[in-house]
Amino acid sequence: MNPYDSPTYNMACEQFEQAANFLDLPEEIRKRIKSPKRALIVNIPVRHDDGSVRNYHGCRVQHHLAFGPTKGGIRYHPDATLGEVAALAMWMSWKCALVGLPYGGAKGGVACDPKKLSKGELERLTRRYTQELIPIIGPYIDIPAPDMGTDAQVMAWIMDTYSVHMGYSTPGVVTGKPIEIGGSLGRTEATGRGVGYLINRAFDLLKIDAAKATAVVQGFGNVGEHAAFALALHGTKIIAVSDSSGAVYNKAGLHLDDLVIHKADHGTVAGFKGADAIKPEEIVALPCDVLVPAALEREITEKNAARLKCRVLAEGANGPTTPEADRILANSDVFVLPDILCNSGGVVVSYFEWVQDLQNFFWSEAEVNDKLYRILEKAFVHVTQFAKTSQVPMRTAAMALGVSKVAKAAAQRGLFP
Image 1: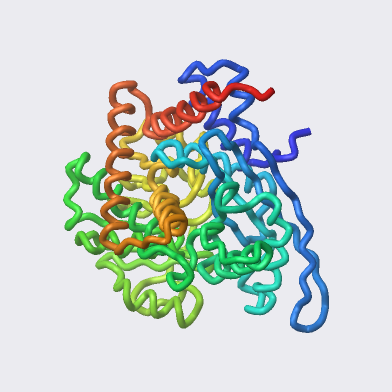
Image 2: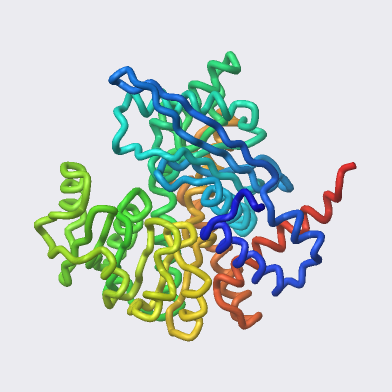
């Protein structure tokens, strides 16, 4: 029995097999780089504010170690299962390889709803989870980062717990930390900022005028919010956004500053007075130039793929489009910016933060953004050129480039003993 068996993990494996078939990888190499290197499952007892003790289940999956330490976020979400986390770790492997980072992929998760925990409960859960992870994390082993349900404060607690164990401050153990304790300028905005940059490069390729374009953002969290602002800087009109509680639409364009204030006050975009309420499931079918799925996995499926009315599908989330949906989109005029390319800005700037921590030498935000855009530009050109010359979809091109690098590294390192 496969311990990672889940719809999301099976989807990640199917995408891998498609790329491996295209590359004609030997079966021996496929087996070595497909399955995770290791996984740790932990039980996390947490004392709640009312004095009761509740057990939470967490895990950490490290996919491969061929390039160096592993890298990946930590997710606090009720559906953070081992299978989902393993899939996210696999996608992180191909993502890091695609953009040329010296990392293998990793991911962690705790099955909980952070919105229902007090700050004290969240801190106690984080510190206990970190204590369980200490044997397998570290600046040269595995470097966590924020993901859905976690933020800079959670990373600060992880860093502090690890540092107390080591006996000295170890900022390089995590990225996405507050600036005051070794975080990098531009890290919070990096994923969404990168999504915006790559959408504009797609617009250039398709001869779409960004100043006249419209965008729909599914998932107005950290990634979706910053992607929206990055697009708005170039004049693109954000006509609809959604989150886990609702969706809002305004054909004339949403006022993003007011929307952010409303969400901060109410915890959701639902009820925003500057727009009309629509059903969240309708948002993907709105006519627009770019649709940004920036929520959970498997949101674009065979049930709604044919209803998409966008010119560009920019995957801000990991795994938002199923293989069945991909086959439908392959016969359409939708230009897909696949997740391992589109949302790679976050791990790129996480890499910058790690490098700065190891050197104790920090860069300006302008330097960070310049280096980020250079890496994204190189990856975008590689993927688009490979897709064109090989006559394959953008996802196949991105996956093939990422998987081939990992396969070559594994083959060159050989087997021990």
